[in-house]
Amino acid sequence: MSTPSQTVGPYLSIGLPWEDGPDVVPEGTAGEILIWGTVFDGAGAIVPDALIETWQADSNGRFDHPDDPRGAVKGFRGFGRCPTDNDGSYSIRTVMPGPLPGQAPHIDVSVFARGLLHRVVTRIYFADDASDPVLASVPEERRSTLIAVKSGGGYRFDVRLQGEGETVFFDV
Image (cartoon, rainbow, N blue to C red; front, side, top):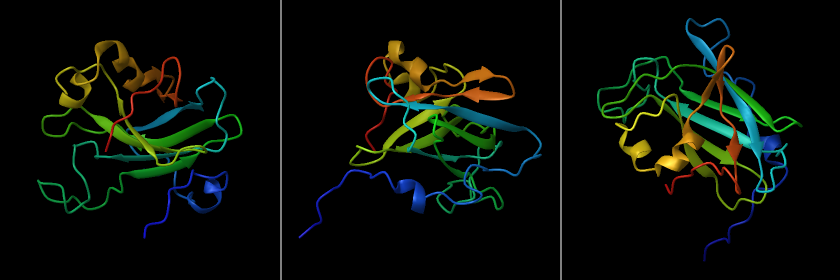
């Protein structure tokens, strides 16, 4: 017998974040950038109790993971986790990811929020690169929801869980 699914409750922010969570790289790392934005619900209201989780390659497109087909490169965690603030905002300190074989530079993103039975998964791209097979599979009129906008010393990437301008989410 399996346990039925439950929605992500309002207490996810108690157990999931950790001290280094939003810092994929330490402050002052050469080439560091900030990825920041706001999470909105289907009515356009902010979501103050969501959690953004990121996974990415280093600036050379490599992972410190045994599944990297080119061999693991030690020393780059590549993982970040940031709860949203009371104003629905989050910020991740990282470096620009390098391209993977056959893919444009991107960051994989999971979003956890109240009312969701499971996380939703999307990607952050830094340019509309139709040579990327995943981005090219998204209808052209929806691709902008996957592309971060350069802003100040970083990139803004808002997440819209439903409604007008809904972020494209992938079935993984």
